[in-house]
Amino acid sequence: MSWSQTLVAAIIAVTGAPDAPPQGLVPPVLTPLPPQRPVRTPLPPRIDVGARVLRPVMLRDRPGGAMVARLETRTEFGSPRVLPVVRRRGDWLGVIATERANGALGWLPADGVRLVEEPVRLHVDLSERTLRVVRSGRTVARMSVGIGSTDTPTPTGEFAVTDGIRGWGPYGCCILALSGHQPQLAQGWTGGDRLAVHGTPAGDTIGGAASLGCLRAGERDLRMLLRAARLGARVRISA
Image 1: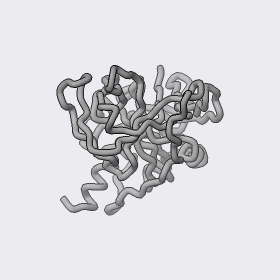
Image 2: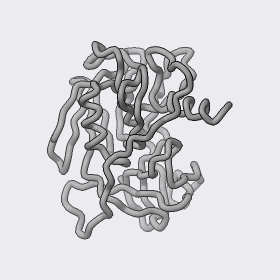
Image 3: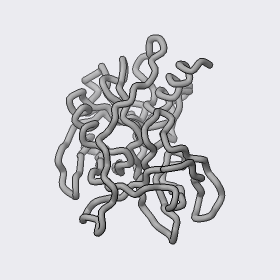
Image 4: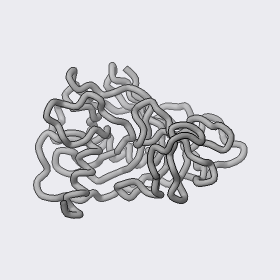
């Protein structure tokens, strides 16, 4: 497999099945998300904390436990690797990471990361088919999204933003890659299980339930979302 083919396979894995196969080889192009500031003391209220990986570290299943994966300083798409910190135990940080199953934390040593502020969360309500951008506890934007079909529903739980990527063809303008996985893959689908928020040329599916698990949004909303979201931002998807 060539370098370009490897990149295409990675993008397909992160975004779920397209409505049509991509034409040719389209390497991913990062859309950098806004920068974070280092954690201030005391931390402002309603501000989450992220861990930016500064050197290769081992992700473990519990503090000092079995190794799950080796994390590099950047994701497979080239973004700085920033993981939301949701628990602390001594010198260990419990984080949401792609390398773990939905709902399972990974653990990192605190001396291998730099803590950064995460002022934004994304809340997805599948029953209302909406995505809200929440800043410091207040909703600052709301958009309609398409969700997974009955056979391939969008999974619920706590996830994180991992990358912003320029979209193409069936993915519209933009792709906001998430840490979560689709546990109910469509029969015959071999393109991976990663979740994302992305565009679509089938605008009538926005607000509907027709995807293989990813969330679909309009171009204007997606461009706003990429201006607002941060690497490592928490994403809550609820029924």
